[in-house]
Image 1 (spheres, rainbow, N blue to C red):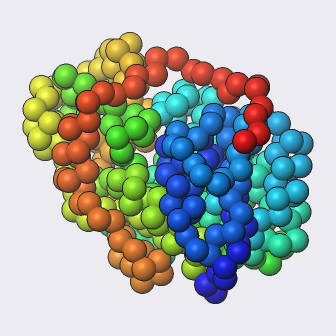
Image 2: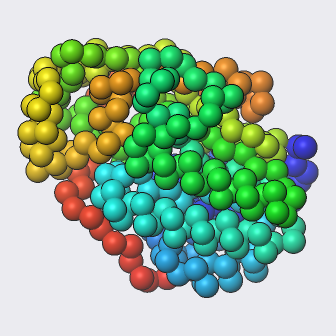
Image 3: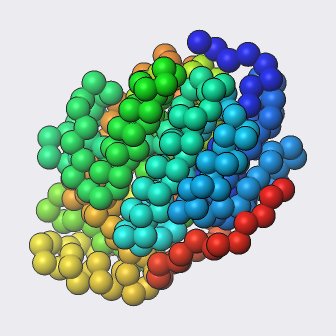
Length: 332
């Protein structure tokens, strides 16, 4: 069902780069009435009419209070911490679990709710059978990394809540997201002066630009998406190809050398988490053709174009240690 005008939309994770971008696009949509967002950090873009609440993910009571008072028609759940993007793996797992429980639990108490759209990832397909193929949405999840298991749990919780209260639920399974200000462990690694790659297997992978991912979320909310959809830029690239396009120094590695490289990379501020290791060793592809049919949008930039833009950006933010959320709350 397509939404009507005057819809109330709530965006969890509005303070992140993707959440801020989604919010800025929603502000331009005629069908969106009121817009509300919650996150531990304030939005990274100037928003004209969105109401924002700064709340840490563990403060479930406060999140439930704000969400139920707003009573959204649509919940876009973007409060997902990719390991070693903004926080280390342990903190990312905890923050994501807290946010999933709080936001989806609160949504279940909203009488006006019609649709839930959650962020997921193609990491959900795992590495064992499908790394070098392009799995479509009919392939059963088989995550083999911590991030893959995190997004699988988000989908399961969302589906359970949606089935219980009788609303549509859609999951956008994103390829690794890159953008000018996106905290990405893959992007951070590729921007290093010396970049490791697997000499024994240099498999292809795909990515998606943050702007294309944001447009997909707006379309999913508007169309009331009711199933998982892969969002993947066309084309593919290998690790060595990406390194050469960026005029970096390629460092060929085999076997135990990777353990040394991971420790060294962590020291210089570019940790290589489990799911990024899967990209470098097994590849990461997925079939994104269903997005055009169900959402009416497809990525504007191809994977090689997104990678080229990665190397055009002037700077990269390095995170060298875990950072806990702030306990300060502000309302705008």
